[in-house]
Length: 231
Image (cartoon, rainbow, N blue to C red; front, side):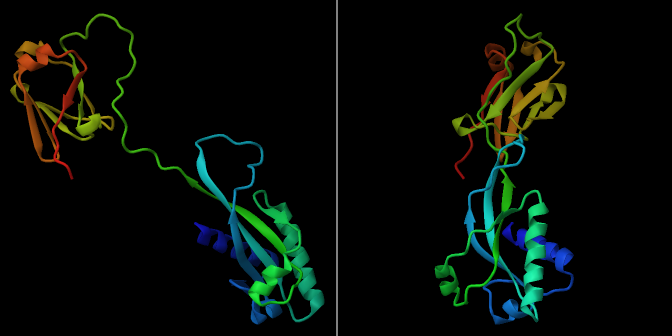
């Protein structure tokens, strides 16, 4: 993701400075004499978002570049550096820092101190949505028992972790369905439980059969624990 910021800054410099060469990396004689150098100095915390902002929380950092400019004459180099710093101030998500770069940094780069500014840019990555959830049945008012024409439940594995995509069948009625992302299934219209015959659940090479007497004895939603082998 930081390399995307590299490309964005190179394109941004191109819009400001035209065909001036743009260099990434440690400032050297070539970049200091005839182009713009974008040196990634450090990573740090992300700057505060302007205007608040809501939405799903994301992982955020900032990247800080030292920006210098060179040209065939000091006057042209100074003019180019000024154009860049003022253009950076116009960008909504750029943070310009004008405090001097410590001489120890220049000494570490083996380069004489020169005019520059630091540019801090945020880098964000959306958090991945959790893939595994504990089984949570939807909260519903406690009313009369579910009518006999509906059969619903959830299929879970070890630790009651839901199993999505499990195949649930009522062979006698030739009805099949699959569990959703939370491991739950539903047959919306079936005869009374006592006449259903067996219920079969298949997932990850395992098969579990439940007779109608077991189904009748269990309250709905059914919680079906499928024994799975350790991977």
